[in-house]
Image (cartoon, rainbow, N blue to C red; front, side, top):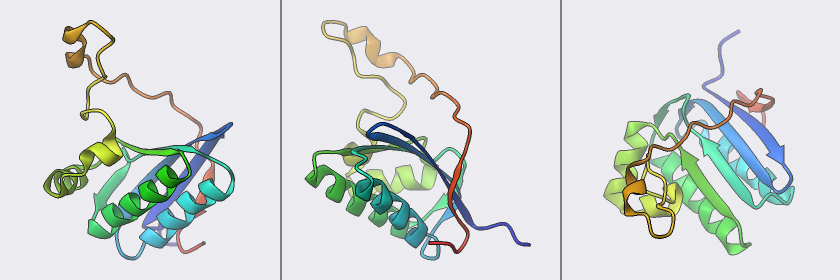
Length: 141
């Protein structure tokens, strides 16, 4: 049995979700990403963190999906943030000038606490590991 090109794990905590994507995000797999993000909205989730650490590739269709989802989530008072995007996605975000929409703070940095300008060089702490629970995989929608 072939390995699916993209696997999606979702972990909810009240009105917040951590979605971990593993594999490739492209024209073939963006419907899975879109469905997962839309399901979060339908379930009342208003803060969505997307961990892209295990993503090996993301094309412009993936970027478009994240931008569209961000727009929809923002419209209902929520936020969508991408964490650890692959280099190709970081370059596309930079070229499009929209990294502030999806990355929030400068990538790899924490916002400074009030009155402390030196804190801008602090690295982002690693996120807590969460046991993956498959939400969508392969061709399932």
